[in-house]
Length: 146
Length: 80
Image (cartoon, each protein chain N blue to C red):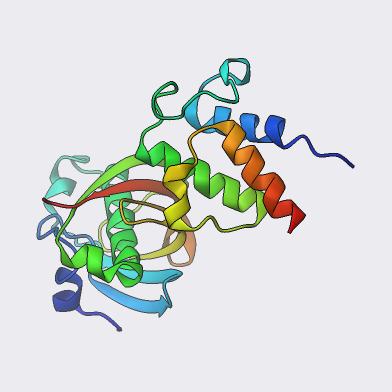
């Protein structure tokens, strides 16, 4: 583990039950971050999605990928992140290739496409046991609080 | 081989901002005339960088406001 939960929370504004990164296991400069989410059996959303047939919602997989992307962005723009900006997803192009179930270990790899002070683009994959569950291109804006 | 940069760039921009190529005048201002917001602008820049294998310095991005400027920028880079 390279980053533990405490370090992750120093960068991400999200908190439980909406924090979807447990650890960062690899960092390659400001180009790539690999992070892990252990999908808990008792996560509340499984109760309703779906009763008796729990599957992790696609929107939450995208959220996990976006959070990993903010971590990567923070390595390139630490001064922007230090100012506690707001992050807004603007555009998502995604392919959902296989379902994610309770107990799965989700490995998220995010790669920099373009980073600016007020916007960012990343290419991200989320895998379970080396099988790609989701592949996405994320475009998000970063708005500093005045 | 002569490359028609303007046509290539129009097609690229058309796909990102979802405006038909025939409606993309070379001098149309991305922000005022074509409703391009900051996220679409970064998508245009990223696509442009990928296609022509270049990096546009961040401070120059706000100065690129229409397709004619991108085309001139590309021609100048290709001369170097």
